[in-house]
Image 1: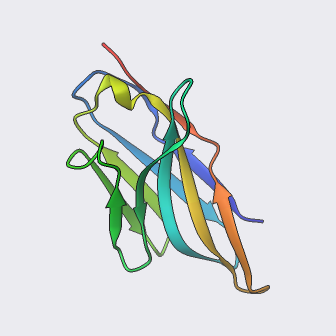
Image 2: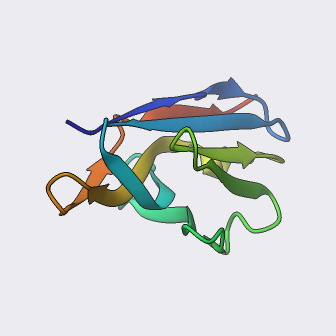
Length: 121
């Protein structure tokens, strides 16, 4: 079974920083694309950032220049470095991973449990 475990959320003041991590576990799971989404109270879930196998990145306009997504392909882990945080960044952040179970040639998409980021003074 493939599982995602997220960590790194918490309470931070405006202008502060947090680093989120998401580790994908699975004995025969080969990760392709990885990304982060967020959902604020009363709003739809939205894309924050994605990173492909070749390292190409895509960011939402609202986080460009402030957030950086990266990955460790050996450990199947994706990170989101969040700098210059604003109150409007407050949301539950979800990790998304797409890959293949190689023993079954099965394509999978999984979501993390979510980690709460609160930006407030």
